[in-house]
Length: 316
Ligand code: GRG
Image 1 (cartoon, rainbow, N blue to C red):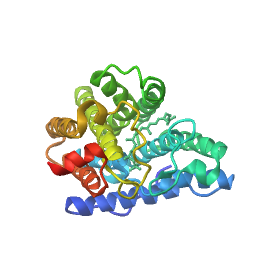
Image 2: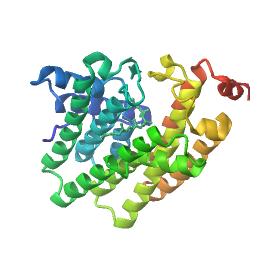
Image 3: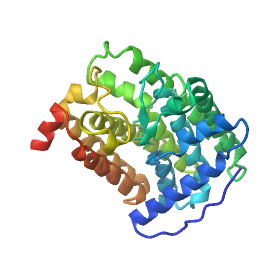
Image 4: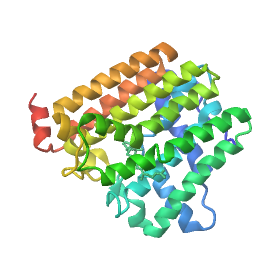
């Protein structure tokens, strides 16, 4: 299945990102129409179509753009990743995991539709993601096969599922920063890695270039997970759009590095990633997107009524 998009050729970065975000949401909406069983698909749409930032999908589009592709060449992969990400958020919010009430500024999916429907809707989203890639006949079969392999690997034991398991059950046994970074790379980094890899695969880059993108994606995801920890410590439900201060008893980037230390680590990772990406993609949309996302996260932290460590940040 392939759905043509409307906004091609916007000029400056903000206009371009807005247009891409609009295209992504429009295509997601059309990829998951309300069919039977209605409540199950409505639950999937609740998880998928709320006010997400669409960072992972934007990275696919930006990377494709920088490599000379048009939006429609990479849109299927971008939407598949968003569907998997939305499924992971639905599951992460469940009472047996994070037990969250609010996500993307509204009720979590299990609160709105019940736990059984929420779990099933997440499974439905994951299956639809693979269906989309499999059906995109405009991509060569070898590219589709590799996309399926990469996305499945990212969800599996070595990726989101294993990272989430360790996050739930190893939190008192983490041996400092290297363990936390390894866990975050699996829980969050791998999906960013797949996003950049999808751009590289669609553009037929060399194996070496794809490996560079994949590795930079992991570091980028790590940086964003550190930002997520900072937002949990220093944001408000209103500014972040989800429950905050959920991680106070956990080992996080903030508990290990402190607020300023975590900020510096984000800065360092983000700057390394931009420099690596510019080698493959030029100083272009992807690099600009990486800068913009970090800046916006920091802005959301400052709006918040800060926690103790956040107050120190505000004083500096
Ligand atoms: C089978 C898909 C699947 C997952 C099972 C539940 C689970 C294992 C993994 C959870 C992984 C997880 C939720 C990691 C946190 C990643 C993260 C930083 C989420 C917030 O991402 P944003 O800020 O959110 O991009 P929006 O709402 O803007 O999309």
